[in-house]
Structure formats: structure tokens, C-alpha cells
Image (cartoon, rainbow, N blue to C red):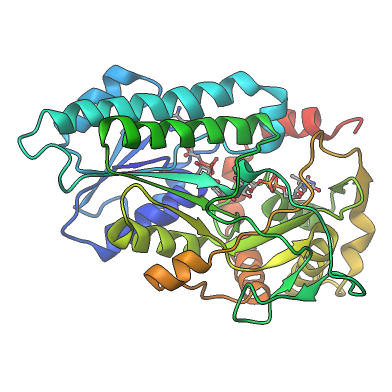
Length: 372
Ligand code: NAD
Ligand code: DAU
């Protein structure tokens, strides 16, 4: 069972599992909120080992029924409200889905698995979380050095904006309603492991990008805005740093961890790929201009500095060496390559963008960016 399989990351996970494991029956459970779109899965929707069920994870009775009827033995839980800006406007929806939804799923899985003769054996509840639960890192550098600088944290020539990284034992310190709700759900998952012996795994991943991401997150929003000649709303001074991972690399990591990860354990997932927002935005502008036939860099005049996001975390940077060493996973793509692939996808899939932005998107856009 994959929850949130109609969303951005979930659809890549569903596609990977349905294609790679024809002997598995993959049940995609999704409420289809504004962020969920079955159009993300058109290419696999008719395959015999795939089934979609529309349901709300908050509904305990529905979760009990699905898990029992479908004889679920493994859960990869991605369903969530995922956008920080929305969580600032509406924290309750985030608490409901991310905390209560996760709790319903945990409880329904526990009840069903405990009713079986073999109980928890061969079962797994795999919870997908975020690096944002660790809070914010600072931009720092060793004496006499200007960031970004090379670090030993990665074997590649990784440039870092600070001397510290999030590791699996970093203390939780969430700042936004989104990350607070994700942190709470992570704690519930670990509590079910420690209290009831549920076989669980939690992973915390850095920022994802790639095809099928809803155009409210930085990269798809800005690609769409550049194409439409709309302003690019850069929060604050654009100096915040994020650590970017191509979504298919995240899906591969999930596959590896689902099959080889140690139950009760936690893994950080990230590509050692830190970018200051403003530098990333300039690469994005260059790539979109080049691929859409405009003079390279000409869309830089769309950059508009706007009021900062409240509680805006300065820097995220994941140390994923545990995952790399213990399970052998590595990111496959260089960032510029991933960005080019992503921009090409958005250029070739304008219908998808038109479709997902046809509902309340303009109202949302005005609410977020008018008078900012
Ligand atoms: P998304 O917003 O694109 O998709 C979320 C999906 O969950 C949608 O299909 C939506 O319909 C579904 N959903 C929402 N509420 C639901 C409910 N109550 N019941 C059933 N389904 C519901 O999110 P995403 O970016 O793909 O993120 C997926 C998961 O990965 C989330 O748990 C998120 O916290 C985590 N994560 C995301 C990133 C990232 O950069 N996007 C990074 C690390 C971790
Ligand atoms: O780190 C993992 C997290 O990454 C995930 O858990 C979240 O689900 C996902 O949304 C993402 O959170 P961020 O807040 O980092 O992503 P977002 O794309 O919203 O913003 C990336 C950076 O760009 C951040 O510093 C804020 C900035 N930004 C964002 C938007 C939407 C802007 O400057 N302008 C914008 O319009």
C-alpha cells in the first residue's frame, strides 16, 4: 500500500514499484486533494498489479477496511499536506492529515497485523518524512574561508554553505506548522515501534524536484512563471540554502530502504547538493530561456524580492553517508542535468500544468502573492 501515490513523490514511487515488481500488488490510497492527480499515473494505470482507492487516511474505519480487505503487508506512507506556505495559512489541516492521518494508518495496520498468526513478521510500516523536522542550520565557514566550500562529508566535490549537517541523531527542532506536524507524525511512528513492536522505518529526505511537482513549490512555480512572463517572488534576500535531490533518486532510495533497511531504524536521504535560492533561480532562468528559445538570462528581469516567509529556515543540508555506506544507495544525477530534464518535462507537458492549475490555483496564487 502506497499512500499519497497520486502526489508528486508518491507517483514516482508507485510507477517504480508497479513496473519493477510485477509480482507485487500495489494499492495506491489517496484522497486526491489539490495536490493529488491521477494524471500523474496515466502510463501505468491499466497495469494488472496496480489499483487505486480514493480514501482519506484520517478515516480510521476506511483505513481498517482497506488494510484488511487488501491484506496489506507493507505500507509506504507518503500522503501528507506538504507545502510550508499553506501550513502557515492553515495549520489545522496539516495537523489533521499529517498527525491524525498517520495515527489512523498506524493503528489500522497494527490491529490487522496483530490479528494474523504470524503477527508482525514480514510486515513493514515505512514512513516518509522530511529534513525540515531537524530545524534550520546556519550559514558558516571555517576561519578564513568564504562559503561555499568543499567538505569531507561527501566523497564528491560537494560545496557546502556550513560546517554542520543533519544526521540521523540530530535533535528535532521544527519551526513551521508543516514541519511540526511531520515531526509529530515521526514521533508517533517511533512510539508504535517502541511500544507495540511495530516494524517501522522512518526516512528524512531533503528538497525534491522533478516532473509532476505541483507549481506552488519553488522550482515548478518559477518554471511556470518564467514561461508566462510572471514575476518570480524571491523570499527575503534569496540567501536561504536548500539541498536538492532529483525525485527519481528519492524513489530509488525508498525502494532500497523498503527492501534492505533495518526495522526500527532511520535513514537520511540527500544528494549533497546545496544551493542558495538566488543562484538556483539564475540557473533555472538560464535553462528555461535556453530551452524556450529566449536569449539566455533575459528572464532575470522577472526576479522580484518579496516579504520573507515567516520563520523561514536558513539552511538545510543532509548528511546521507549512513544510507550510502550501509545500503549502497547513491544519487544518480548532477543537478544541472536534473534541472534540464525537469524544465524539458514542463515544456513538453503544458497540458498537465494547465490541468493542475485550472481549479482554485489562481485564487491561491493571489492569496499568496498579492500585496506581498
Ligand atoms: P504532494 O503534496 O505532492 O502529494 C501529497 C499527496 O497526498 C497528494 O496526492 C494528496 O492528494 C495526498 N493526500 C493529502 N492528504 C491526504 C489525506 N488526508 N488522505 C489521503 N491522501 C492525502 O507531496 P510530495 O511533495 O509528493 O510529498 C510526499 C511526502 O514526502 C510527504 O509526506 C512529504 O512530507 C514528504 N517529503 C517531501 C519532500 C519534497 O521536497 N516534496 C521532501 C521530503 C519529504
Ligand atoms: O526539505 C524538504 C521539504 O522541501 C519538504 O518536506 C517540503 O514538503 C517541500 O515543500 C520543501 O520545503 P521548502 O519550504 O524548502 O520548499 P519550497 O519549494 O516551498 O521553497 C524552497 C525555497 O525557496 C525556500 O527557501 C523558500 C523559497 N521560495 C519558495 C517559494 C514557493 C521563494 O523564495 N519563493 C517562492 O515563491
